[in-house]
Length: 399
Image (tube, rainbow, N blue to C red; front, side, top):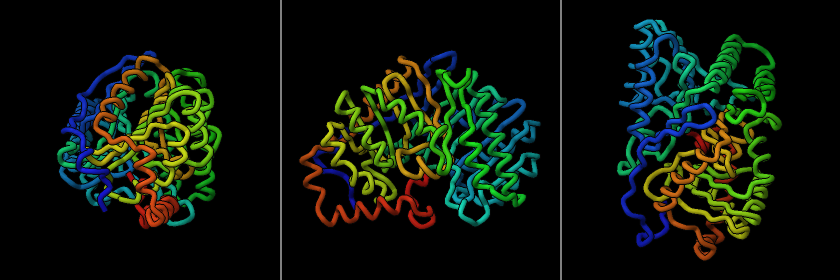
């Protein structure tokens, strides 16, 4: 099914921006909007590690990119680096055998939630690579050719960031908590889901305490206070400007109301997916456009290629990480978002969104009225409810 708006509306040839670095709040943030740059930066991070590598991904494929990253990890283990790796069970497209060279070289490999049960719907959706406890790469991109291919080849438009600074210690602390949880799962510990919820609820990700300007926020199943979305909602209450890029959009009603309120007292711009490998991902977002448009939200659908980026800028606070604006990221998945309160970084990230807006098509009330036929609305609603299903059924918000 073709979700493009109209051939005449197609934007000019799109090019991902070059990497850029911003110094903010005693940290360095190097951002990689272009796929080839992301892969090169990840390989360099692994290759430059001297003592330790802690790697946690949702999806890892056995294609050319996945093999290149695995081989870099194997080489690191062979030169004496302590390599620890965790991959989500559902997202491990490569299979356990693919990682045997890593364990043979002295590294460790674990699978997040390999057992069936009510907790099976809980997925590790995070993407983390920590080198020597001093540098971390995170963001939305998994390890697969799709995430490193250029827009011309319909690769995923995404964003990764390498961070240096005090908050990296919080990433290391968080990795150890997740690793302990995974080990206890493999050992058959009871009340496993409750333990995970407690870890998320009790987490304090501030580099300099709870009020830190740079914080590692996390999320997990059925957790409210302490969740990354808890802080996001607090920011929305007083916000006058909101800019978002979200590949999957189906937030709870309370958040949609908060977004509408921001639009009524200020300005909201939202870049959504105009192309996806899953048609239903676009359908479930379109179901929710009407009320947002009515409130004055400016909505754009990104056209050059598939969209996978997760980026939120609320006034002077920026969020970069793994979480989509969908129900799974709010209520079910284990997620992370780095929140940085810094006006200069927020302004630079808004420039990135400006670049994406220029390659997008505006969703107007007239266009929406034309598209929102009875049959389309039925399809959109079905997609919305399937977004909470097991990924093996719906595959929505999977990556």
